[in-house]
Length: 125
Image (cartoon, rainbow, N blue to C red; front, side, top):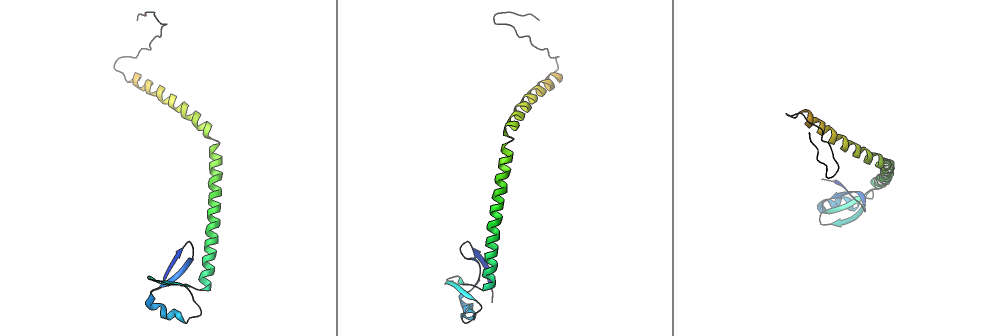
């Protein structure tokens, strides 16, 4: 005989046997038949029902606690958004300056800083 432990959201945990093995459950007062389907007979007993309810209650408590922790983490980290955006801008400027320095240092011809003139002026090197 094979007994399978299964669960779903509506019934919680329950046991299932094939329809052929249902005869052993028929007159047994320790088990309560939930329903009979093509794939077998679903049944439970008081101990399994109690454990299943405890499991579902603990699972719901866990999910509520997890959601509260996630909300707290999001609220804390949202306070750092402005700082992170400022840091992003500073790092982007620093990256550009370091790239220019790297290119000018490794150039085959020495780099000369350009002179910016007013519009219409002509400059000579």
